[in-house]
Each structure stands twice: as C-alpha cells, then as structure tokens.
Image (cartoon, rainbow, N blue to C red; front, side):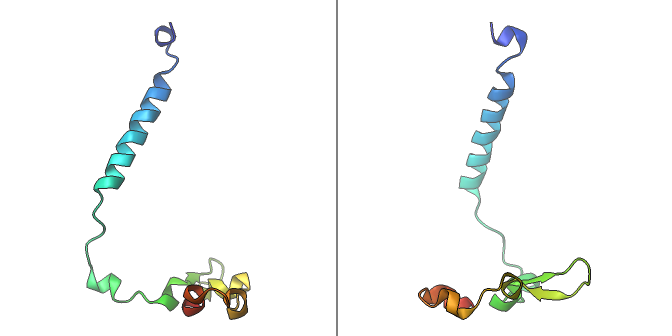
Length: 81
C-alpha cells in the first residue's frame, strides 16, 4: 500500500544514489598527474587562502592562532607547521 500512494519511492532513489556513489568511490583511481598544477603545490601553499575582502593571501595557521607549541607532541604536524 505504501508504493500505491508514492510513499517509499524517494527512499529507494536515495538508496540507489548512495549505492552508485559508493561504487564510483571504489572505482576511482585518482587524478592524473598534471605538472602545471601539481608541481606548484607545496606544504606552504596548501595553507594559503585568499581573503575575499582584500584579495590577499592569508595563512590559515595564523588566522586560527596555531603555533608550533600547540603541536609539540605530534611530530607530523610539527613538520607541516
């Protein structure tokens, strides 16, 4: 009786989309190497964002007030900082 009135159809479509998304994720092999874009990526550049008001590049770490002291017990994060 649910399907007669249209109930449950949205849920079925939602589940189908979820299953399709999961299959797509499993089959994803990654982005192809593009030297123009990829060679310019550095640890420092990954933390830079553009301020919408001024157009300046701002370091996210400074904005959040993150210092080396905050991560002294985590050598991986310390290396990034």
